[in-house]
Amino acid sequence: MDASPVAGAAASEDFAGMLRRHGLYPPSPAATGFAAHTPAPEQTQATTILAFKFADGVLVAGDRRATAGNLVVYDRADKVLEIDSHSLMAIAGVPATAWEMARVLEHSFQFYRRSQLQEMSHEGKVRALSKLLRDNLGFVMQGVGVVVPLFATFDTDADAARLYFYDAMGAQFEAADYAASGSGSGSVRSILHYENTWGKKPLRKMKEPEAVLLALRTLDTAAETDTATGGVDRRGRVYPIVKTVTRRGIATLSEKQLARMFKEKVS
Amino acid sequence: MTEEPYRWVEAIANRREYIEHQLAGGSPIAAVTYRDGVLLFTLGRERQKLFEIYDRIAMGGIGHPGDLERLRMSSIELTSTEGFARSPHDVSLRRLANYSLSPALKAAFEQIYGPPYLTRLLFAEVGRGDAPNLFLRLEYDGSIHTNGGPFAREFEQFGVVSGTALSTSLMERYLREQKLEDTTLKHAIGVALHAWLIGHLTLTDDSREDLPTHTELARHREEQLASATLEAAILERASPTPMTWRPLTDTAIRALLYEE
Image 1 (cartoon, rainbow over the protein chains, first blue to last red):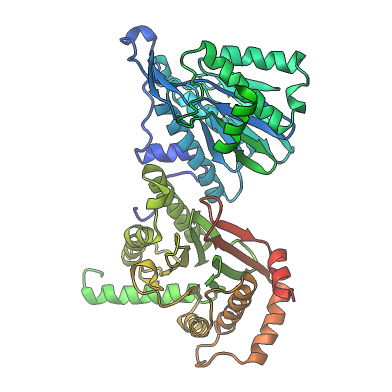
Image 2: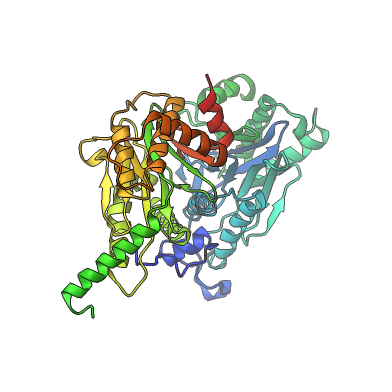
C-alpha cells in the first residue's frame, strides 16, 4: 500500500475495475473476427440449467454434468451458485469463465455494500453481470469462454421475484415465467411452455413441492435426449441441484428430499 | 532544515503535538467481547463511525473524516482483493494492520513535507471457531496496540480508542475489571456505554487520576442519552453466512438498554 492508496481510484470504482488495477482480473483479448483464429480447442462445458417463477419466488435447478465434446468431464458440477442472500446465478457454458464471473459478482456486491454503505439495487446487480459478459466478448469471439447464465433475485423493494437470462454478449432479458440455458434447454423450454399454457395450473400458481417435482421431471426429460445433460446417479447419490429464492432468502433442497421425491414421483 | 537530525526530531515532535491536539475532542469507541461475538459501541452526533471491513473485521475511528475514509477504503480494498485472489479464510486483521496499514501510516507521519493521517483507528476481528477475538488500536504514527488476540496470550477482552491517552487508559482501567466473557448483548451494551461515558467525561480534564464518580457518570449519562445518537454493531461469531457484521439502530440499542 502506498501512502495514498486510493487517491487514484474514484470512490465509485467497481470491483472488477479494482481487480484489473491489481492485475487480478486479466482483460479480455480484443474482439476480432472468428476467421483470425484457429478453431477453438475442445472445452469443458456446463450444460442444462432452468429457472421458473412459482408461488413463493423463483426456483433454479441444474443437472450435474460437465462435458468436453463427447467426453464427460465431471458429474458433480454445481451450476447453481449463491451470489448473495437473495441472488442466484446459474451457469451454462465454460465453467472456467463462469465460476470466475460468479466469484467476481459475489465479491463485487459485498465490496459495493462495504465501500458505499448501502446495498446495490437489484437493477445494479443485474447490470453487473451483464457488464462482466460484455467484458468477456473478446473470448467469445475467439470461440473460447462462452457463458450463457441465468440470474434470479428477489427484489425486496417491489416484493417480487425477478428472473433474467442473458446472451453471450451480455444482453439481459427479463423472463416473465421461465428461462433455460445450455444444451438441454430446447426440451426444457418446450416442457415449461406446455406446462405453463396447458398444464393443470400455470407455473406461478405452483406450490414448492409441485415446482420441485416439475423441475426434476423436466431435467430428467432433457437427459433422455441430450447426452450432455446428466441424469441421476442414485448409487453415487448425485442429484440435480435445486434452489429457491424467496422473500426469506435462498433455500437449497437437501439430497434426502430429492432422493425421496425421485423414488416416489420421478421414476 | 530537516537535513539536521535535531531539526527532524523537533519537526516530528511538533507534528505529534499538532495531531494530538486535533484528535483530543474525538468521541470514544469501545469494543468488547460478549457471549456471541464482538460488540462495537459509540455515541455520536454527525456521522457514522463504525464500519464493516470484511467478513470478520470491523473498524471504528476518530479524527478527520477524509483520512478515516481513505483508510477505510484502503482496508476494504486490501481485504477484498486478498479474499478474492486467495480465499476469505486468508484475510486477517493481523496482516492487514502489520503489513499494510502500519507502514503506510508511519511513512506518512515521518515524511514531514507530506500530510499525516489525522486519525486513530480501532479494529476488531471476531475469532473463527474457538479462536480468541482480536482488538487492535492503530495510531496515526503506525504504532499498534493489541489485546494479544490469536498470536499472543489474550490478556484483554476489549479494545478502546479515545481522543486522549488519559481518557483511553481510564476506559481500559474500567473495562479490565469487568467480566465480559459469556455475557449477554444487553449486559455488553451496558458495559460499553459505561466505558464510553468514562472516556467522554475525562476527555477535557488531564489532571484526573481516578475514575469519575457514580454521580458524575449518572448525570453525564442522562445528558448524553438525551442529545446524542447511539451507534453499535456486532460481529456474530456463529453467523449463518460468512458475513458476521450486523449494525444495530439507535432504537434497537435503546430498547435493549432500557429493557428490564
